[in-house]
Length: 478
View 1 (cartoon, one colour):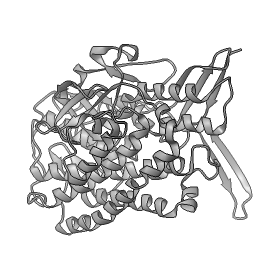
View 2: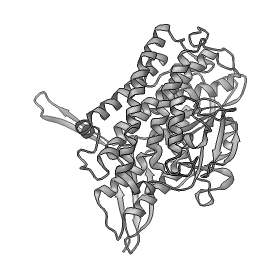
View 3: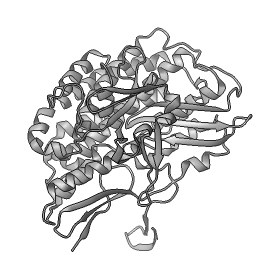
View 4: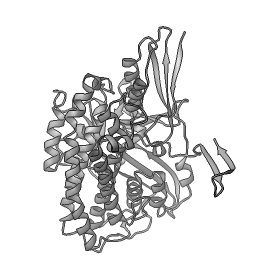
């Protein structure tokens, strides 16, 4: 008799989701699905708002990657105004976006995934978390906490605050960078570099621990997509061209990012509030249209890293499987995040030396010159698009937010199916096997608040206690 295994909730990710695994009569895996149960509808309540408000409003979509949303919204505003921000503003946007990537990747690797990677997928669940890691590997856990602090501090020094900054605006940014802030940022970089170098030194231990299991963690052919610099094909997070490559590393297509909708389409499924984007010319998943974005994709599509230490690590990364350029296993998202942190720290250091960085001219002023505009950047989890249509007064009449996590939706579902099919046999499974399936999702570091651009409420229980701890009242929200 067939039955269903349910993992509810999926833990150590941003947002709320469930995994269901359907077994056939023989107890073998017939299907596995990643269900996103929250829906927040951010797009709808942005309609009617001014483009000047959009960077601040969309920063509230997410507390982990607000900078990327704010910058993409501001860039859509740049296009609608028909202006190019001053060079200093572009440098500051780039630094803030890379610093946001540092803190987000540190959160994913150290806080959410390192316990699995260093203590084992089947370690005691009560210890398989950040607190357990602090007890078992304190130097690793403290390094991760410090690295995230460094990223957040750089964002704060550039943008005024680390969470939900409203500093990027159409035409540029609100404030120039004080010289003292440049010196403070520079002082943070050596510590960050030391921590990420030490983390990269853990990879041999991680690969030895997980061994042959790695090939079951989302290792399959797909397309990969993201930004690369226009001429050199280097790692790029702010500008450049949108490149698609196949599993063999062959470039399939390069287009201006503003024309993303010519390459990417979306479909819906009744069992998830998250859409399923796919590469338009190849159709849905069965026809080869599945693609991945984010750290793994960015390292697969670029021709080089563009900074010295990251380039050396990229060469080692591409030798992992003996396949040359392309690494297809989603387990390697973790490794890719560390290389990207290294690259971001190096690149920020380079930009701090740019003579235009402290220029006081950081905003280009103009009125509404276009009725539509697309803004984009590489968010920590992958390429992010903000697509706006406005009226003559700059009031948003239509918008589409194409989020990185959503673009990985087909791949996440394929990943959990592969893991479940590998480890569940004859209907038998353990807690450690279920955690492996959850870890398949953690590898992508999904941000579900972003991906559902959400409407709705989280479950909540509120307890009112008296001074002596007596329960006075309680309320529940489902």
